[in-house]
Structure formats: C-alpha cells, structure tokens
Image (tube, rainbow, N blue to C red):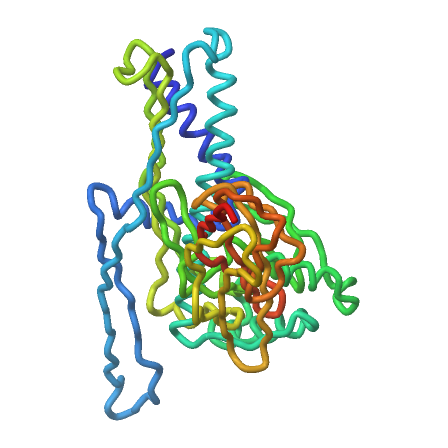
Length: 390
C-alpha cells in the first residue's frame, strides 16, 4: 500500500462520511479553522458599535465608540483510536475494500455520534446557562416550535436562516400533529460538499437527532461517552445556521502495514480528530432550547447480596423532578458493569426491583432508566447483585 496516498484518500472519504451522517456537520467553519493552525487557542474579536445619532448642523458628527473585545477560544476535544485488522483477515486484493468499510463504519457509529453529542450538549448548555429556555408540551409540538422560533427571530431578525434540532420524541410528536401536515415541505440543505433533503417548516430546516445525543452534558472517556449525572434532555433547539462554528483542526489517518506494525501482524489504522464548537458572545442570545425537567437522584443503586430464598429482597433507586412532571422507572438486567446486553424487565417499572425466587444462586447486574414524563431516560449506575445459596 502507498501509505501517504492511502491515508489522504481515506481521510478525504471519511470526512465525506462525517458530512453525510453528522447532524451538526453543517456548522463546520473552514475560515475559523485556518486561525488555529499551529495553535490550540486563538483570539477572535467581537465587535460592538453605538447606534446612530442626530446630525448637528453646527457641530457636525457625533463621535461613536467602537468596542472590540478579543475572546479567547480553545480547542478542547482531541480524540483518537488505533484500529487493527489482522493480516489473515485481508488478502492483498481486498485491503482497500475491507479497510474502507471498517473505517467508514467506525466513523458512522462512533465518531459521528460523539461529535454530535458534544456539539449539541455545548449549544444546549449555553442556552440553559443564558436562560434562553421555554417550557414546551409534547402534546402541542408546533406551538412550542413557534415559540422557540419567535424568541430567536426577536434577536437575530427575520431574514436569518434558522435550523431546528429535535430529539426523537419531539420529532415523532411533530410528525403526528394534524395541524402541520400541510406545512411540512422537503427542501435542499447543503452540508459541506453533501447536498441533503430535509423536512422544513416555513423554510426552517428540521434536523431530527436520536435522543441519546440530545443532552445538555456528557462525559467523554476512554471508549466513548455517556450522559453526565447532571444532564437534561433537549427536546428542541433553534438557532441561526451561522451562529455556531464547528472547527475540525485535524481529521487524520495514519496507515501501517504488518511489516511496519511492531505490535502485531496486522494492518494498523490510527485515526485522530481534533475539534470544538464555538459561539461568539454577540451570537449567544440567538440560541434557544426546550429542555426536559431535571432528574435528581436521591438514592442510586448499590451492590447487593441476598440468599436465594429471601423474601422481599430488592434493589432500589429513587429520583425526583420538578413539580408538575412525572417520574417513570424501567429496570434492565445486563451482562456486566458496562451495561452491555441489556434486557428490559417487564415487571421492573417501579423504584424498587424485587429479586424473587426465579433467581438462582449467581451474580447478576442491573440498572434502571429514569424518565421524566415518559421520555429522555437517564440511566442509574449498574449494580451487582450476588444471590447466594439458601
């Protein structure tokens, strides 16, 4: 393989995958990207002017101040992963094809969800910190949408192109609403070099995003990301299309053949993406959201041990939310601490889950999803239950 040429080709193709699959790729700002070359931080000016003044025929022009505030923006997300494909899994003729499929799938299933989650959480938390929130209702999604649009247009004006991100529940409610059936149109939406077809209302692009990525806070760690304990779900977020600036300083690929790979007899692909999203202070008030009521854990699950014949043995989690909102619980059994292989427990829809006689001696893992008004679940910790001999 020609490593340099192949790396350039793969990087270019993976960038196209990102543009096609990411909900936030249209925010990419290549002009801003160039200012970060060779640096992690850049100063970007926010300029403010004074308004017009009456002209004085004797005194002439009234002086007006121009305020330039340089704001420091720092790239925070530097993420990478090394992938290996064993030599025996790839013959010489199939290297490019199989590698391309694997890398494309990696970007689609791992990179894009994480980038979208980070960007949307930063925008949602900005709206929340600024107090740019409205109280919505899933029963009347169009009214909520109009309220958000009005708030944004009151600041940004009526000639600014807007976009609206919606989570799964809000989008489903909107599509099922009788009042907007004739208002939804399909329009062109340019995202980098990719032209997409999206639904729109009154010229405002509607971008549906899976609920798992629509949170106000995430923790990004080795192996992926998960909602932070303090996160709240984002039902809708409306903003001007140009209000936020996604900067991908590098999205690079390094390729090593088995002969060059000192760790294994395998082809090695090193993928790195260095990115962040920025909103100027002068544009912060143009981002508005409808977020879910908060979920506050009073008690989280804890590891537990019980005998197989113990009566009324249970694990418990307790959460509270804002007044006028309801809490729902749903328990799951899983394979290990990571939560993999989760199976919904039909009888587990209360704050406590009973370990009954059907559980033979052994080790089991459980967690609970807590929902506000039946949507946007927040997961508890995973607990280990050890069932001993009677």
